[in-house]
Image (cartoon, rainbow, N blue to C red; front, side, top):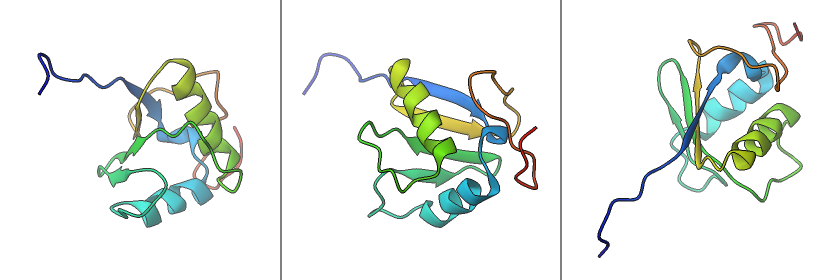
Length: 99
């Protein structure tokens, strides 16, 4: 037992930072208890646990998001379609072209 609750730090990122390929990957991993990281679909994006030991087989955009989350000591990322894009990460349009 602990004297106080554990507080999570969540990085709020736009889904615009995810390519169509990565969005499909997150959809396929949502709810999969055997996945390397937890993914929950939210209806407006995904809630994802951050891993520090990243597998190079993941798309570069999700790896960049994990790296940013690790630099700010976030344990989770909320990818939300209503969140603003940030300059530190690439932005993708719906057709997977960089904008």
